Length: 104
Image (tube, rainbow, N blue to C red):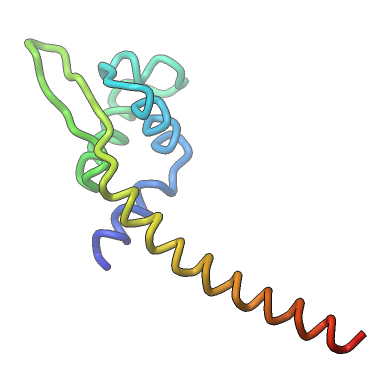
């Protein structure tokens, strides 16, 4: 459960979600990832560090350039957790629909 907490915490920030969306398209350098945002490079580096600690980002260094890629396994775990609740609420809403039909 701790890994889910870390994953959802990392996903709670819109900048980090945007970075992950970009990485879903393929590997990018830190400069590429920073370009669309109006924040400092150190701020982007902090976001990347949080994503890396959550296991959502892989980083490789080639010379002075850092290349980042998406590590999607934690997202699958989060999606599985959400799917269980989607099923729960689907059953509840189906029951409510049935009840409303019966009371008409």
